[in-house]
Length: 374
Image (spheres, helix red, strand yellow):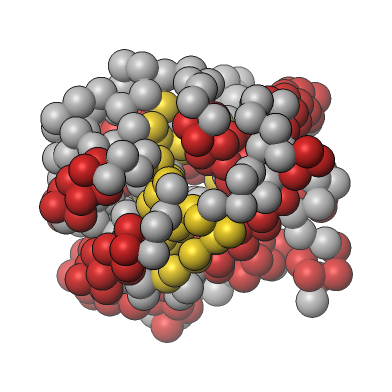
């Protein structure tokens, strides 16, 4: 708990420093923090995920506090729609673009148009690939997110604690584990996967964990567009093909809360009940329905990525660029988009389980007790 508090306080402190940097980033604008009333385009992938709604709202609110006008658009996971929305933002005279791409490989042409108009581009949480016209990237340490997801599974099984330290007298297993991955067109999905698999592989190699279905490749585990219904269908197929002999799934690596909810539905339909050999299930994004599911014992963990802090980083980047300054970054090595290494600012994330929901999510103001218990 003490280490969790330290991570939370460090994250909040970093966010506060970034906010101060954005407000003092030169250029004037009085109390509005340097915005000149110009337009900034914000392209988000979909409203079907609670997480992206929060991201869009946070970015818009913070940009407006800086004195900018904001064109916030959602493309409902349709690539041509997102391309058209970004084109329209450029036509309307956007001075900067903040883009959470649906498919990070499909924006090269429209980003060239932006570059030709000297419009800086910030990739938001999802790296935009195959284009030199991406100036900065704001995200989390996505490899570490994968490590945290896997560590939470190990902790739920009693093999380690939440810091990853092995537990004395840990059960020998074997435990049946099934693996899910994110969308193959999202660059983050491979970072999550690699972090998780690197953490789980020693336990798989020694036989403590067994992927009974044999589906251990990213391509087999990947769920296009992070679709919860597709995850549910895949889990149903695994249960039918692999567990009809009466054996049980003990843990499921899920990289996103929306997939976790689909997996939970498949398990419930197959006759699994909470408290009776119910599997340990991971997640990500601390979506309210999944936090409630953690409270109810259906989902073991999620990874909290504070979208308010991510919005602060993106706004700080945009403000600095439009003031002729160089945005703060903390990673210039790991995020190669196929054409260039994109300078990045990576935030920290936290494991959330039932015991620390209040400490991490309520005390930080992300969710209220009433929302969680509602």
